[in-house]
Length: 185
Image (cartoon, rainbow, N blue to C red; front, top):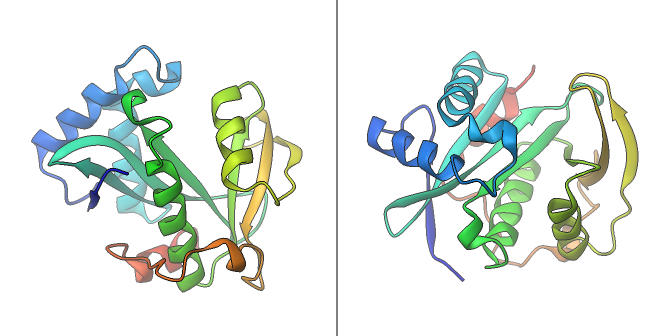
């Protein structure tokens, strides 16, 4: 599995933002993400405004994607995961490592965490089913996007939902738990 590190999108130097834009320009990436400069600028603005928290994912000093937590309006106080990787890393196990960090961080911040995937995104739906085979997803119309999505609850209000599936060494690491705790509040 690739060794990675994270850097806050708000703290990232311009050269890393440019690398992130390149990653998002790959034709295999969902179309809306291919608008890299606008997507990353928007995510950065939301981070500064307190409605999300994003990190660039680096492997060997190169940006290979980003992860984030966003306010999830259908469930007051809940967060939604966001994980986007360069296609060359799909199937590498990195997504599972990143989801583990996202779950651990949400738990540390005492927040409900969901994963929401558009019903037409077969690759992501398959990935989520492999990562969390024991969790049941629910088909939901998300009026804030608007779209139909499959939604998994990764961390419930009692934080016991996925406890047994996390490795004992799962930690939030470089994630700013204080900021995560304030998103959308």
